[in-house]
Image 1 (spheres, rainbow, N blue to C red):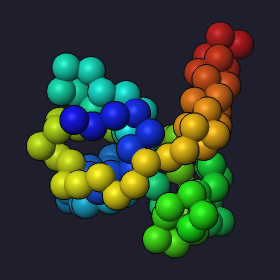
Image 2 (cartoon, one colour):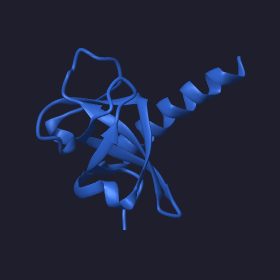
Image 3 (cartoon, one colour):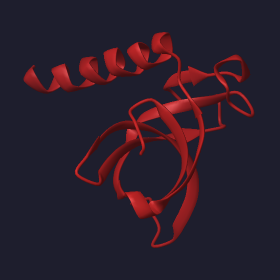
Image 4 (spheres, rainbow, N blue to C red):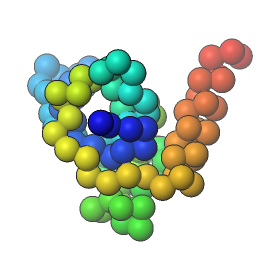
Length: 104
């Protein structure tokens, strides 16, 4: 079973292309087989939450909270590693800040 904080390899479709690509992502939550993920990029110049080798990444990367997808369990190839509690809290705090901006 996939859990919040798992970093996975998932098949996603970006809005700018019809292609489906296998990309790393972090699971935000899993509800009834619908898994909400945030994409991860190795382009460290992009804005987002830093993800380092110390965190478990193969190379320094960025969790992109503006790349959020809902995928099925079948779209996930495997779990790569799990974020520690500190990094999970950082992800959820940043996500809440973005969502709270909708009230303004």
